[in-house]
Image 1 (cartoon, rainbow, N blue to C red):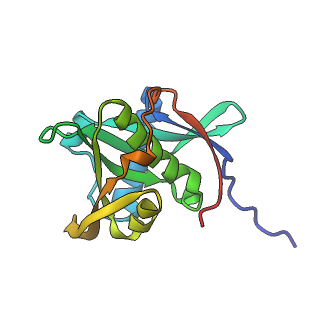
Image 2: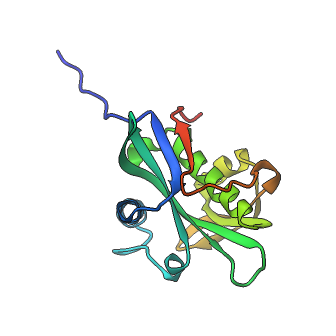
Length: 181
């Protein structure tokens, strides 16, 4: 008689640097859920030495003007071996939000543009092969395929011409939900 309700998915997101303790904690919990529990890439926790130097970014769902929960995250950091190079890693999106292009694409856009605003001249990421097409659609190109953590990955580089420098990543930008193609 009654059809089950679909889970609520917020229509708006604030894509920004994780500036609050709750945002950083929720981002870490989301990464554990995705990389440890769902994918089994890591046992227990996915934290590593990069977390000590990386800047975490979050996609926070909004209910009206109120922040609700962290539904996506990624981290960025400057390369200590190559001047002006930056890396992005550990892109994770909550399962119920993966069909929305606004979350993952928004995080990628802020990651590259904010690094570009901090002097980045080359932005790289090791992307799981099943996600390479998304990055290619966002003006990245593959530098080659290899195995990392027992899974196929592409080393990819962003075309910075498509990512103008963004100088206010602490407040970020509003992103509206659109279904992924």
